[in-house]
Length: 155
Ligand code: FES
Ligand code: FES
Picture 1 (cartoon, rainbow, N blue to C red):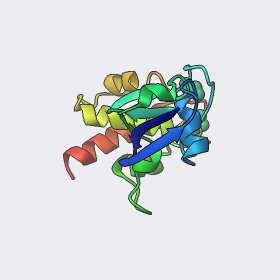
Picture 2: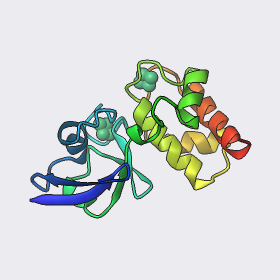
Picture 3: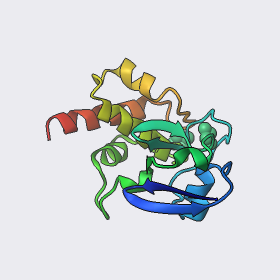
């Protein structure tokens, strides 16, 4: 069957069985390898993408459920060589180490920034609660999201 939706603002049409994971469609069919696979079971958040602005685990979403939606992946963030505000903040605070969790963290962080929720430490930690990181102890990631929130509020 074929399925139509948009990815990072571009219309795509994918031919696949409906149960094919969105994660595999993004990485293998569309070549968008920025989205990572960790657990493959909805536990780690490495595969987080946005569907219509909401954070989802792409390893749990069959492509059939993406029909008609707007999917955003980490590839949408930078403008050419120019990092977006959250990527720049991760770079400055050391929020990315091995990098496996980073694309998912960035997407969860983006959804948080877009929500307009007050960027307190507790709120940021709650926003990334579904994203596991084995390297950073989370503190630098929280700092990065707080820094990006501050810069977004006072550009
Ligand atoms: S790979 Fe999807 S949640 Fe871990
Ligand atoms: S930077 Fe390595 S898992 Fe988060």
